[in-house]
Amino acid sequence: MATEAGREAVLREFVRNRSALFALVLSLVREFNLAEEVLQEVAVVVCDQWSDFKPGTNFVAWAMRIARNKIFNLTRVARREIVLAPEALEEVERAAAVESPSGWMEALQKCMEGLEGRAGEMLVLRYRDGLSGQEIARQLKTTVTAVHMALSRARSAVGRCVQGRLAQGETT
Amino acid sequence: MKQSFEELVSLYLDDALDAEGLAELNRLLTQPEFAARFVHLSRVHGGMRELSSGAAKAAAPSRRRFLRPWMAPAVAAAGFLLLIYFLSRPTARLEDAVGAVKFDGSVFESSARGSGTIVLPDGTRLLAGPETSIRLAGQRIQLDRGRIAADVPDQPQGKSLVFSTPQVDAEVLGTKLSLSVDPEATLCNVETGRVRLLQKATSKSVVVESGFFAVAVGQGELKVEPLVMPTPPTKGAPTIRVTAPQRWPRAYKVTTFRKDSLIYGDRGWRITDIPTEVDGAQGIVTLAEDKSSQDEVLLVFEIDREADVWVGIDGRAAQISKKLPTWLASWEATNLKIYSKTAGNSYYHLYKRRFPAGTVSLGGNHCGGDTGAGVNYTVLITPTTR
Picture 1 (tube, chains in turn brown, cyan):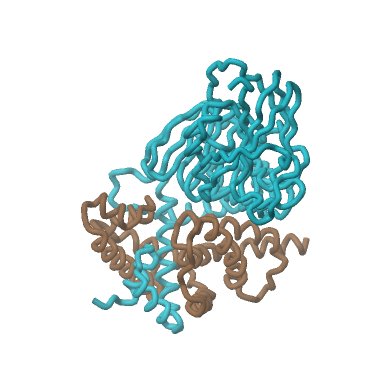
Picture 2 (picture 1 turned 90 degrees about the vertical axis):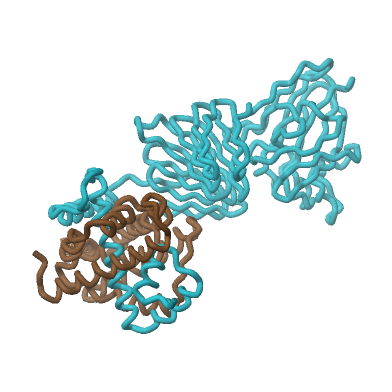
């Protein structure tokens, strides 16, 4: 029974940290489908090797070690390249081990709901439809540079909005 | 114009950052403060994808906002169900592995002498040859290099299996086929059933029926051709029947050789020049993957009357090693050559020997030791009256 409870606890940790892991993996592989695939592979390994996780240690750091191997394999096959330098990657992984405050995703959702007009349209095309900057530019009849600038501004605005909401403890 | 850190990260996440920007980003990220800001923006990026991709399935085309309040818990619940599914789903397994092979349930890699059979949960059998790299992702199978032969059971309506290579997407509906991939070309042979090939470079598609093949090379014309070229009746031509090797998918086939014929059954390489002495002759399409064979008996066929058998052996054979396959050593060197656009633009020296009606046995390319041949031999048969 203790074994079952331990396994369940690790799986709960996975579910709790899923978004943070996905974000970190995505920031390395920079391709939605590939990141989703890596995370699925990580889920399978977490289920198999849950007993290797030491309770009380950082789950994201542990899962990232698994993810790194999967990323290495899948990016090689998909001919993608990790372009972050090892020292940069090390610092990013250290920063990623810090948990997001509770209510983070709800805050993000609220902030996204506030986006309308051209910026909202671009985010829909980028995130919902998975289009590249070039494809969005073609669809909206604008330049690639304009799309990248608009996406950058929208992300920064959403990021600030999330921080603001969390600082105020406001997610409703 | 110097870009802000947020702009650098945003361009990086969109895979649009130039080398100079990347160097700057890598420099900044070694500082904890910037690394923390990077992680924050990455979480915004990943979170927006998670929330939006969940919304995608239900999205109405006319809506202006792309999120609804119920979506976050719904996505979380869907994520949990997805996790449960992935933890309990039937998985692919590896059978009959030979040599150095790696398979972790989704990624397969084989060495120069490795091979294996991947069995998918729906019963699909993928026979993966040497130097092959495969990635399984649901109904999509990525074949980056090497060769697979597939035996695919009937697929549910609207859920075709798709093999994706650098050159094509091959959509399958219940069939036996083989795909060979090298950096320049994909060869698709269909034994039974039908395959729709979509050429990625041109977005053109063709349907390849049973008994036909197609070769996709960059933007080159994608056309469907018969696996076996009909042979015009030639006076005195022997009837040829291959008896070994015959196991699927290693069938050697009898066909007609002329300029533009495929030289192997498992590569998209064509003959570019053929001497008149054997132009239009019947022959046996061998397999490139048998290039390393040291067998004393590899290919066996029967002829119903006396005939001249020609073997085209890689021009590199016997150059350094001064050694031909032992079974070929006593054949007559003709000084004739066949040329082919292979991976190394090979040519083949033709050797000839007359055989009486009956069984002809030929060994492997390296029978008796390394001959230096880098590609497999080819076989042509002409009547003695030619």
